[in-house]
Length: 274
Ligand SMILES: [Zn+2]
Image (cartoon, rainbow, N blue to C red; front, side, top):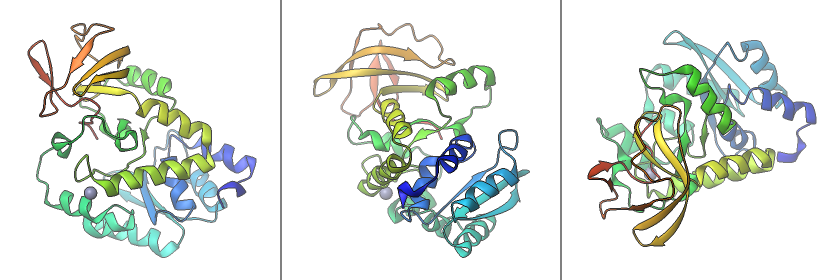
């Protein structure tokens, strides 16, 4: 089923890759994920255009207004797309999570979570890359510099670089990892080049300081808790990060927090922003 897309369908999908998470659409199309929902950025794509493209794939799309923007759900069956809308508007997040194909452990954890970051409990500092979110456009901060952000997203070649689209109950959640691997496989069948580019970004290590303020790099593992940084780069919004040697080492504490010059930072290869 994955290879039956025509050239024009593929081109149309690439046109709307800024409008829809294509790594979520691919598994929906292939019947590996029940449905997805997203908000429409009208400056990038019109409602009519996305409707035409989605329906040409034999999928159902349902639109609704929420918080002043236009949202939509996509599923193979119209009933599922409608159900996503209903649970979303009723704020029935448990049911919504199931319709989006999220693992039950993560749904339960998120229903109970008050205001903490589950990622801080990560077990391994070397996370499987499929679990990472390198960059997610939902993670915009308050004092966002849009011009710089656009430059950066252009460099990443996509606004949203991730394979796991939900918040995992923990960074060692095996079911989340499986979802990430499945999403990657689905995307690869449809758009191998794009899947490869995502992999390239997600395989990098990164240390997050704040929203969109992070460094990222290739690395080599030297010892259990020591890595050598190679090709370190900063996001356009990174502040005073000159304390890092461009070709330096990083030691990782047992607690998976990173200490550099007596300052404690978040995990290596983890995420703090959604
Ligand atoms: Zn989980």
